[in-house]
Image (cartoon, rainbow, N blue to C red):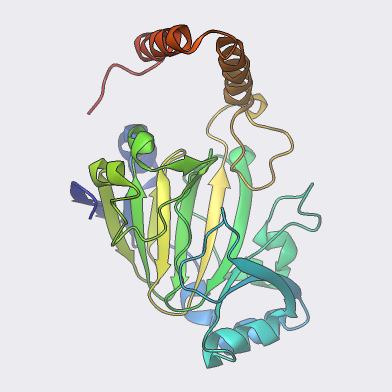
Length: 309
């Protein structure tokens, strides 16, 4: 099992001023209760969504197992009309499969997801928390998940509100400071079974601090940028993620439509490091080992934040 466990704090009736001045600067996850989200929490039944989006074609992930893995791609993509997709979710058309819908932009390579554009008839039902400026808005992602579905642990580079509209989810988060324990492949963790991890294969995972919360209809989870999160749908549910840019726009990759491409400066730094490591490879093993260790110490001294918790 993972090491230290913490509960994500919950706050009720938080105002915009309280969030921005007191909670947001802490850069830690928190659950907001009692936020005015509009009529969506009562209106977005399967029948209603089927009527509203019946002719909308959507791309869904289909997997034969509950734990979806984006590294090995243990799922396939299929296209269905939303009305048919909702029928699958509720009636378990194929009970041995799990289904996951993440809405996309008109052209996913160029356009971000925005529920107001892809599902305009739903726009009037939902209110986004007004805790960031409109010009900071990046995307709003409509999501539907089968019961029992678990999404891979990953991080995003933008701040994010996960709005649980209907159903229940369990969310497990890990601090960016524990990245070295998560066995990363890009922005994703190789450890799929976070509740019962294979510690023979992933021994460092036991050192990762685990933050956990349960989300019910109407709850809003604030996920700061770079915080790893793993989402388990405890029952059929509908959610909306709202991402926004908390840094100047020029910091972000202009080709990023998902909010998960590393910042441009970070990408450049990694490319420079890769070139440095290739240069080290020209040295004999004894020297390569010595100077690689010096590089690690140099990075720790110059780049790491000193205020470890």
